[in-house]
Image 1: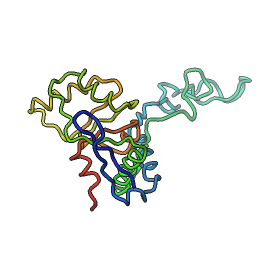
Image 2: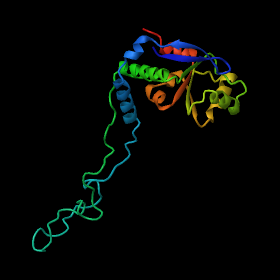
Image 3: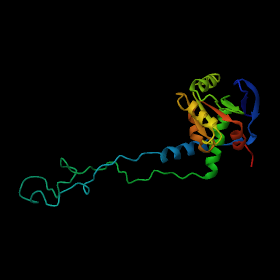
Image 4: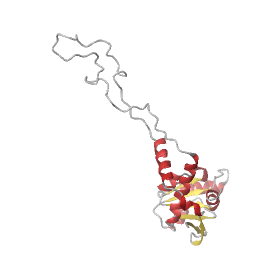
Length: 210
């Protein structure tokens, strides 16, 4: 059974929290489908060229059909002419969105979290507030994890609260870390980062058995 590592305020291991047993039974294909749909959804779809119907001009036949000794031509917008349209080029009139079931979205996230826990890269803390608001203090906290990069998942923050504003500012400028709120978490971003540092409340919500 996979388990997350629970840390104390000094970022030292103090216990483990087991993930539900059914997390081990989730098929990895759910994560594949989610990542595929996610990447398709953010595709810019900006490549576009003009076809012969989009190019300006070409209303008059360039030369007579017969008698000139040249190949027949009906319009200078033809792809065979310089300045004519492009044949078989890319078009931005295309929808790359892929449908994925809501249940598969949930399963993909649970699978991604389970993989992090299996590899000892899912960390839980009771409080991740950085009261000083200094990047140096937040960086020292993350350095104790000894991980290449860290996804920091906090509870939904109230920016009217000064302490939460300072915490956001402290983590914001760290190169190998990214702070998100619980409503922003998804399977793709979890699988992108090497390790995950998560608030206990968020962990309990995500692993709650329905």
